Structures are given as structure tokens and as C-alpha cells.
Image 1 (tube, one colour):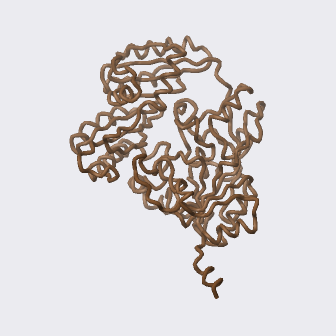
Image 2: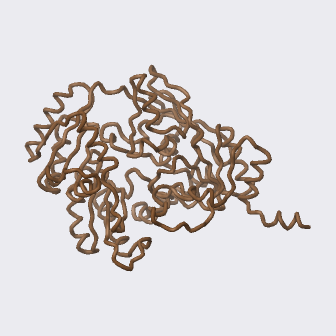
Image 3: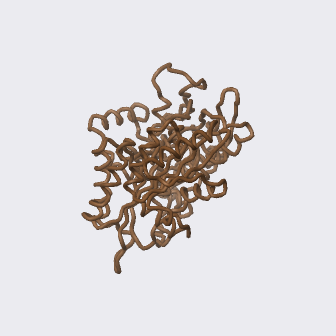
Length: 473
């Protein structure tokens, strides 16, 4: 009788954990507990550093080391009725990898082999736990590189980049992750393993399921292997800065790059408030050089000609252009990735909107009216080469305020900025994904019929809604 009572109190996730330990002891699995609390969050949903721990347990977490083990875990999860959250490095910015204590997190961090590099085919075959930066370090000896470079490239995994269709700085020339993924091996909700796509550069047999899985945020399947397209390392790289006397003139000046014959690898735009934020956080003096900055990287052959043509085009629209030294270039790109910081004395919401490139000046012009209407401050750093802005909306924390509570005015300002992007022909997410944080905003963009079609696809490949429920769609 005592055994029956004990068994009756075991949760489905607990029973699943015991089953993995008993039937497949080679797979490490950690039961739901406070020791796994970090797996409840991704970077976007993690508590503030000064938050008091709430003591809630995290989910059960499994660490497979092969595709076979992922299949085993998925089948067991279905058997016990436990939903699954696939997780890479946890660097996501939309809540896509957050998990509850009644779920199973399948971590891909130990699926981290670079299986093959083929210089003649210009492809690499990798497992999802490979870190983006580690892959490029490995590829240098072959004279190749993997183009997608999210700001978190040093810590984010290829699997996570695929799940969110990550972008990054080099999108201006090389595109987002989707443009560099040729084929995938994916574990479906019934535990089957399918291969989609082609190793060849061209291939149009069947529907394009590879593009369907890229950016699906783990709701359709778990990627266990990827065939990635590589590029030759550029023979040269050069960094240019173009400072302007105002944010408005800098945003308008971006059009000169598009109308020039030069196609930079990276085009980043900083408004006045962003430059002040970098200076305050990093101790630099960028703001003394101008009120806005276009930071540019050129690569490839004819680097002198590219630089001269671009300098001429930008000077004609009022920029003060400089070719930076190698040392200063490295420092500037480091500042772009990590220099802005987050204000400790202010609440903030970070966004990831995108608009047609020609609409970037209009987005920046909209900030003043939103600031006056909602009592906030808005700045934005942009991947200006593809129209992707990362606005930072902040509001002062007054004495007696709870820093953890987002005031209605701050949330309303963020939503209104999303509406501005949509009115200009843009989107609510350029590269971070929808996850849990942007589902309400996605509903502003997608028609009901479009949402129904996406849910029908989800139901077709995952009828039990086993994978990452409540995310993305």
C-alpha cells in the first residue's frame, strides 16, 4: 500500500526522469529541482541580477550526446505525456527556451561535434551544440568562414541560431542564418529522424522544409545535425566611420550607401543617445566626434577602391569619414557588440523591429513623439544594411517603485513603436524570434488565417503538441 501511495504522487516529469535513469542510464538526466532553476529561463527572461531568488524548482533536464539519444528522450516524453523544450546555449532574447518544472528540457550542449569540413563543397556538417565562434575558429585553417554572426557569436550555439533564424552584423552582405543552411537532420515528435534539404548548393526537390524548420523556434522538431554553407575568408577587411551632426542627418545619410556601387559586409547605425550610452558605460568619447555614427566594414578584393567610393558618397551627404586603424577597428566592433550596457537606474524594454531600409529615417523621427506621449526615452542601434533596429525604451525608476514591475506606459510605448514599424511595412521581429515575449505583437502583424495555417502545420508534424508549447505561434 505504501508503494502505491508513493507512486501516485510522482509527477509525469518525475516518472519520465526515473524511466530515463532506469532504462537508459547512459543518458544523463537531472530531475526537476532548484538545482535546475537556471533552465527555466533564457537570457531574455532571466531575473535581474539584483532579484531575490524565488526558490521555485527548474525543469527536468536531459543531456543527450547523440541523435539516437534525442530520439529516445522524445519517445519517452511522448509516452509519459511530458512536453519538451529544446535548448541550446540559452542566449535567446524572446523567451523561446524558457521552461516550467513539469517539462523536460533537452539540452543540445553535448551535441557539439564538427563532423566534417569540405573545402571543395564549401560546407561544414555540425551538431547543434557547436558554438558559432568556435566553428569559425576551426574554419580559419581551411580559409573559410561561416557568415552568420549574431552579437552573441562567442557564446551562442548553431542550433539556437537555426531555431531563431539568427541575424547579426554581417547580414548586410551575407544574409541571415537561413541563407547559410543547406540541410538539416531533425527529430520529429514521434521520435523519427528525417533529413531535409540538400548538400548541393542547388536543390528544389519537394517542399522547402529546411526553410520551414529554420526559425521555427523548436515547435516543429529538434535539429540534431546541420549542413552549413561556407564562404572564402575575405582577402582584406577595412573599417570606416562616418559621423554626422545629428541623428536625422545620419539616418538620411544611410541612403548614400545603398545608392553607391559598394556593398559593405556590415553597416551599423548609432543615434545620439546610443553613443552617449556607450561612452557612459565604456568610458569612450565617441559622442565628441558627432551626434550619430555609421560604422562600416568592407571586405573582399579592391578594398582601396571600395573605401574611396564609399568615402566620396558619404562625404557628399555631410559625413566626416575616417578609415580606422586595425587596432581602433577591433575596439569599435567590440563596442558595437558589448559597449552599450543597460541602465541600472531605469526600467527598460529592448525591441527587435525591422523595416524596409528606406523607412529607417522615419522610425528615428517617430521617437520624439513617443517619448513625449509616454514619458520614456528611446534610442536605437541598427543593423542598417537590412533595416533591423534594436530600440531601447527606458523609464526612470522613482523612489518606492518596484524595479521588477514594468509600468503600463513603458509597455504601451513599446507596442506603439511596433505599430510604427508595421505601418512602415516592417515586422515585429527581425532576428530574435517571437518566443513568449512577442506573441501579442505577432498577432498585430499576422492575419488570423495566417496564424491558422501555421498552427495547422504544427498539428501535422506534432499532433500531441509535444514540442515547446505556447511559443512562437
